Length: 166
Image 1: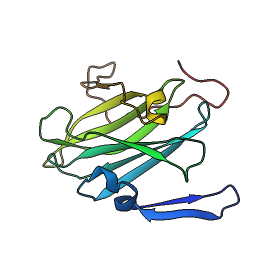
Image 2: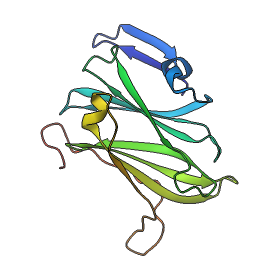
Image 3: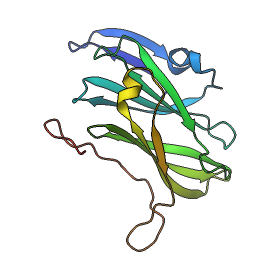
């Protein structure tokens, strides 16, 4: 939950380090947790999502894109607000999925007393992330189910290796 290991296809360890070192360029307070990694078969790249901080004042969603298909190479890192509604909530339990052009990061927002607030989704265009450029993204909140109830623990699903959702 606090380290990253990269191995080759034969299982040989190629990188080992903690998230504080891996993301040192971001100057966050640390306490990284809940890492998620996905391989994007359409762009032949890796995407890593990890959370930092567990209070409304320091909660951050960290997203990193590999520049190439080699996870030992350059990674471009970005941060997103862990309290995106500015309502004393913090982001937890991330889930990720990819489509042809976008990354989806969902998570639950909790009030500082740890009571559930709501789920949110970050919809992020992948292309610029793979090149270290400014990201285009939107946030979805106030997501309701068919009974007009607040949804909990949404899971974005990628669409297979041969096809992808536009």
